[in-house]
Length: 301
Image (tube, rainbow, N blue to C red; front, side, top):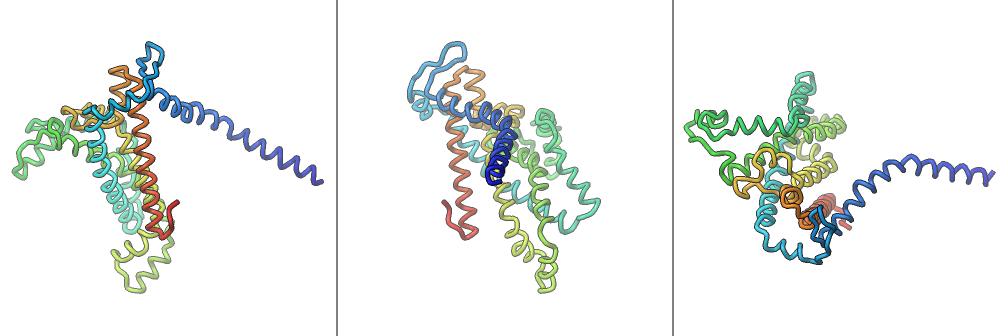
């Protein structure tokens, strides 16, 4: 019987590996291997038409004198620092209002409306926003601010207006997605906690900071981590809205990778920037993980 049981367990283990084998093959073929290939190409001069030529650290030395890299790092950092906190806060507050005050058909309608930007094509979104942010005085946004006596703004043709326009559109696009995540987490919080707090005389603000926020720590960590990674990977919004302009005002790291690889045909240099992006994202993710662990009162490691 013991041999039979061992054989059954062995067959059960093998069948488990067979179930995950297709996904494992795809993961290795399209994620793991390309990462190692990118690291390898970062030490090469490669223009697709000719075989890669090993050049050592030449691409990494060129990194220090490339003005596009410094602009991309700065713009990507500004975008991340603006978008991640605001979209996290806004989505959390909207989810709290919908979960605590509008848990009805009206709340369902509002959630559906806020989720529309998430599923909308980025090409269509950028085209609409280019019309709304037209620099003409008759543009929609300029017409609205003109009602309060403000002059027309060249939203996409000036450095800071263009960068912050991209930030605000990114927030508008992602808030609905993170709102749904926060809403799902809030609906899992036991109603008895709020009832007990109400009996003890705690108001809405006290309940939010004493019950909702602590219970949402894992959800908040997920939202902040996803938001940070997405912010460092922003590409389609910038590419279709401003193409990195005016000048290098909205150039991002992923757009620099695209331009280096598919416009300048410098695949080795583009691979080097990709490795840089990977290192930055990993470092920021580790810092976030340690920060959230320390807030929980546990040691990181």
